[in-house]
Image (cartoon, rainbow, N blue to C red; front, side):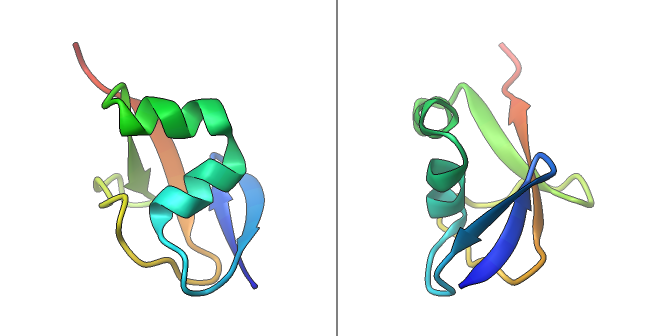
Length: 68
């Protein structure tokens, strides 16, 4: 397992999982919001991250509400 951080909370996932899986493990409702385009995920540099992108141990992700 690797540990990634979603909005500061540690989430453990197998190394083969994607950003989408980490969000699902973090919170089902947030995952549904991501799926529906209500929010998106950024990294610690503020860049948007592809939900199908790979994870690495210690990665920091942030959920951001999409602009209307």
